[in-house]
Amino acid sequence: MPRPTNGFSPKILRKSLSNLMIFFVVPAFNEEQNIGRLVDRTDAYCRSRALEYRLIIADDGSRDKTAEIVREKSKQLPVTLITYQPNRGVQEAFARGFVAALESAKETDVIVTMEADGTADWDILTVFLERIKQGFDVVVASYYAKGGSVEGTVWYRKVLSRGGNLFTRIFLPIPGIHTYSSFYRAYRPSTLRAILEHYGDFYKEVGFSCVVELLYRLHKMGFKLGEVPMVLQGAARVGKSKMRVFQTINGYLRIASRCAFTRR
Ligand SMILES: Nc1nc2c(ncn2[C@@H]2O[C@H](COP(=O)(O)OP(=O)(O)OP(=O)(O)O)[C@@H](O)[C@H]2O)c(=O)[nH]1
Ligand SMILES: [Mg+2]
Image (cartoon, rainbow, N blue to C red):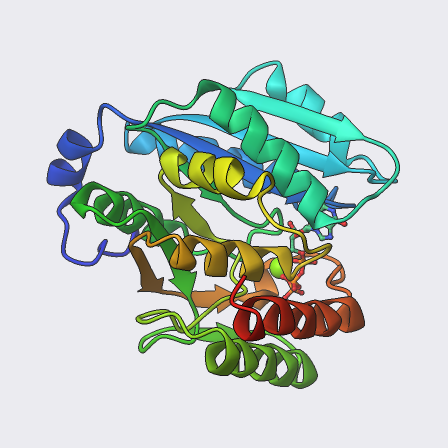
């Protein structure tokens, strides 16, 4: 049974969200065990709520059947495959996905990023869209906000994630934001266009820390950022995590020294 969407009735939601298009941008690396499920889930969710969408999957040098599966799905569904070799990291996949989405997105549309592994809570998607309609420019799924949590993940990943998050909250404070590393977010297209125009790129970072840098840039540019509590279901993923721990820690340190101390 679908869970209630934080107080918004499905009927009201359908009416208020009927004229926008969602551009999903999903980075994927060796996700053959999860990607088909993600495509089907996206389609079922959007279809049941009469949401128009395009799902852009950026396959970043996978050595498994990720691209093949997505290509097959794109024959039937509004799915775009971006694929290249070799693997360059999640920053490249996000950047290519953003550029593809921005080529078609109108200002009233919404760009939603999420992981390919199915760990996101679908029921908060409509809350994201409502927040954007209410005037937020960017909304992030937050497992460290009150009401959020991380479930089904090994203890050392939880410690690392919480430690990294605490670090960013101390050195890169953003009022009202408790989670910096979440991939699951909704952006008004104008925010990403503004970042590109102002900085010339979305971020400098390579790897998972790029999303932290992007969020901090958006904050510094004065955009209104909000969050929605989420329970991250770690057990929903099949296969191993692709997060490179040391690269990510290094990235956080670099961002802190570049952004917090030099205020750039
Ligand atoms: N394009 C691209 N995507 C990547 C790369 N590494 C990871 N990803 C994707 O980024 C998302 C997050 O990676 P995960 O492996 O789930 O990392 P995680 O969420 O920290 O780990 P779990 O908690 O185990 O899920 C997934 O959709 C991956 O497929 C990469 O090098 N390139
Ligand atoms: Mg994951």
